[in-house]
Image (tube, rainbow, N blue to C red; front, top):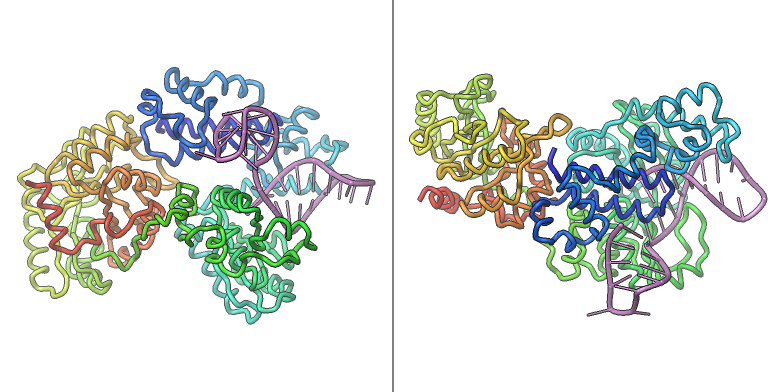
Length: 591
DNA sequence: GCCGTTTTCGGCCCGACTGTTTTCAGTCG
């Protein structure tokens, strides 16, 4: 675990504790924000602490700064420890129970001495919650269900699985005659790497058809259980336990609803602040002048009877707030609103900008297709080049190539390349970065290759200092063009190397070494925040599928999504270079 | 707790829904 992660967790817990203690909700919100800032950022906290730049970060004030500094110095925070000691630790997991919030948890704790999920379950069984103010039979039932739900469907799901489930719900919805439009919203539309639930917004041709659309939705084949059903929203659990929420709005309000439910929460908060500055209010129905909105007639589930400034399309809403429309993948409150105000939004990389894949495997090591098969599949995607990069000798389990076999393999790759028309194969290798930063082949062997990806596969639990030195040493090798999956993290699987990213970025930028966004789920490594940090430091990225079969190339869109969330343009990514330009990039480092 | 070019004090985003309620608090997204 890195320092940033540790501190981010500390502030998140701090915020939860304050909620439970009933301190000002704004304090808790402020600490949640600090937690998120720390999680997203790639700057070196220790360094920022040393040279006093910590306070320049928006959202981190004097209190947070003090806590961070003390934590770096002593490994803990006095402020946090005091608060943590005053609240039983078992209360925090209770916040994950749907339907149960800080107020009720605090009530149970103070009035009934309940300090854990287990004690809560027991109290419900024994009936000791009866008689508490505001807690009736239905509330207790809901909590009971919430506890069961948390145990059963606690986890988030990866983007790939979530998209599949989402499509299976979206497609039949689009076929309903009452619907004029239906789109994903929420984290799925923003293409986050993991998804908690699927959000869909749909527009009605006739505003009175909400009830029937809802009724049809909850009967789709994938639905396992109905959680709620009404004329404006419905909620279901699919087979496999994924929650899917549907919002139903009149066509005139579709843009505002899509914007609102796409989020992120932080992005929307900023937008509503902008609206207020302009004497307007923004909600899921539209953007309204405050005066007109306050005067207007309002009925739950229906748009207010005021003329909106904007509501039909997202473009209208953003434009009325003085902003360019922006891709959902940018809407994370990472500076996109300022950029949109100043006309400085990046022209994001698109799938069609990719001219080739620079990390792939064949039957020579652990792939399932031959060089020819992989080359034909890449050509069929319109690629102009493909780097064949089988494993080095240390990857015994993956049938890694010995030096002799590699030299033979290089000849074979070049033979196939000469034979093929319309695509060039680069003879490459994915060489292991050993625990101490040495590479798995001597330079003399690497010099024979057209292209080298160097990746960490073993010793992925090193401390930050060892791990960083190890990757730095690989970056400094003149034959290494790309660091493959730099942290080795596996989503839901392992943390990966706790790298000091500012040092890695500086070395990569100085030496002309690209860092990979490995597009294969569950890697997606670098992640969006780190890729964003790399770009800010002037590093080039390489987006690769690490394909082990011809189907493997199909994962490229997920890597593109990570790059888009990192604000990458085609100019930032070496896969978008023309071949001569790419060759120059390689040669520059070898000089 | 954080922030500020109308503010260094007084704000801080919005609506739906639910349950326990005779007017509102808590939770959620």
